Length: 78
View (tube, rainbow, N blue to C red):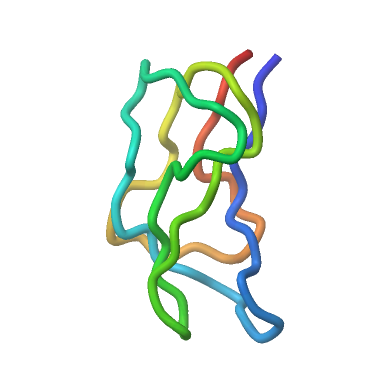
């Protein structure tokens, strides 16, 4: 089963963020809670953790793209 990696809201006023860089690549193993992607928001850049463990099977948003909060960024398969 796939776990959707969605852009989390780092602060109350955050409505969007920019993908800065992926810390893992498609095919890499990931553990829940480990940093997966860097996101730039109004208050600076932060590492976003993986919501699940497994293998990163798809990156849906490339670096430099601005997306709204809760947008699906990637997929992690168990």
